[in-house]
Image 1 (cartoon, rainbow, N blue to C red):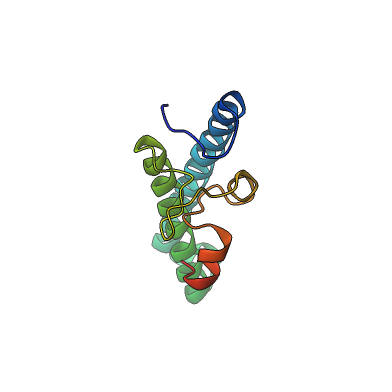
Image 2 (cartoon, rainbow, N blue to C red; image 1 turned 90 degrees about the vertical axis):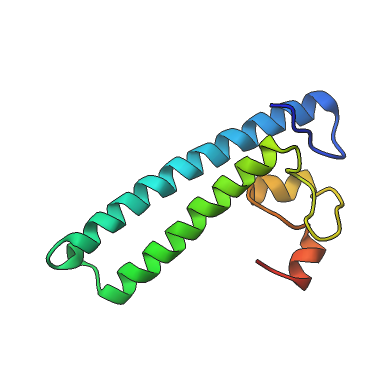
Length: 114
């Protein structure tokens, strides 16, 4: 992985990036497995015990989670991970640890959340 995190020491950046990549890969796997379970529940006679609206909402949110993790991993491979998509400034490492799929720094997220 050749991506870097802005505003951190090189060694700390590399280990933080590995940790964040591992977290995102795990999130992607967990969300993908969850989505598979929800889709299968939708095919069961009584929707696997779910209310139809609840199942639809859970499926929608899980799809969003899969897409967010995949997008963050794509940004890592393109060396754009950790850069705010709005202001192009570095996203603080603390924010990335709290929200690894973050696309915006906190001020920009407050202006245009996604």
